[in-house]
Image (cartoon, rainbow, N blue to C red; front, side, top):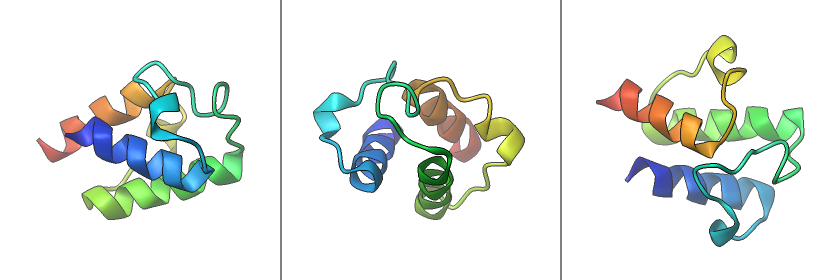
Length: 76
């Protein structure tokens, strides 16, 4: 499942527990990621799913669910 992979990558990059991450979790707000963390996570997701996530799209992600849905749309 895409969400599980996204959750694993984010937890690994930020050093948080996977059970802290839900579809509604905000990377910046809830997990206190900074902009560098966000860029590194997007790059890791691009590598994992072999897609490209333009900055304009990434700026619209409000929570982890948005990221998972975006990726699902790209790989479907």
